[in-house]
Length: 190
Ligand SMILES: CC(C)(COP(=O)(O)OP(=O)(O)OC[C@H]1O[C@@H](n2cnc3c(N)ncnc32)[C@H](O)[C@@H]1OP(=O)(O)O)[C@@H](O)C(=O)NCCC(=O)NCCS
Image 1 (cartoon, rainbow, N blue to C red):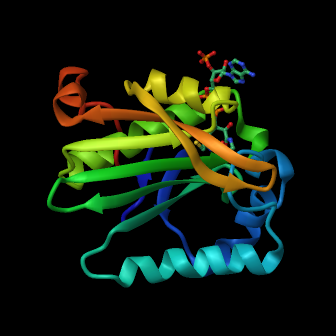
Image 2: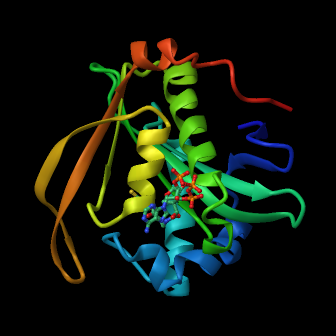
């Protein structure tokens, strides 16, 4: 994948093997995986994650796209945005994102969410994009609402976390809603 600029100094590209150390800086933090069914990562967990993401690029047809978010000013991977194609027949996919906490609260999560939606509808021909998040994960809920998603419901006991069963809030967006919101006109490419 070519470099795609999300702002003047942030771009994403495919993850590379050597990125694991940067990824580990955030994936090993408790605060980052608090609402996830993984982590905090040990080094071998992060190496395995990067390896799986690289393998996913080779799968035909590709169903998992992991975008590494790079801060060009420090030449470092500071997060990732992911799209998983759930069904080619129904043209549906799911998004997820993660950032190093040093970069939280600056609108970057929203930027990444927008770019994922644009990639899903604009490049991957999806009709529906969904996302789930822990009801306690307020910042992620804000991101999903700000990028134009609709709260569709609550999935009870969706996942088993370290501290027990977790409900998930389900958010969704349809192709037409993205187009109505001016989709496809926002991101600068290089
Ligand atoms: C979720 C995540 C990507 C958000 O990234 P971010 O760059 O901080 O997001 P933004 O700055 O674009 O927006 C965050 C919003 O949450 C709000 N927010 C943050 N903490 C909040 C809190 N405790 N209560 C209320 N709102 C809160 C911010 O005010 C902001 O909303 P606003 O613009 O309306 O003020 C980041 O926190 C992260 O990587 N978390 C760990 C991984 C994760 O949870 N991923 C999502 C899985 S569903």
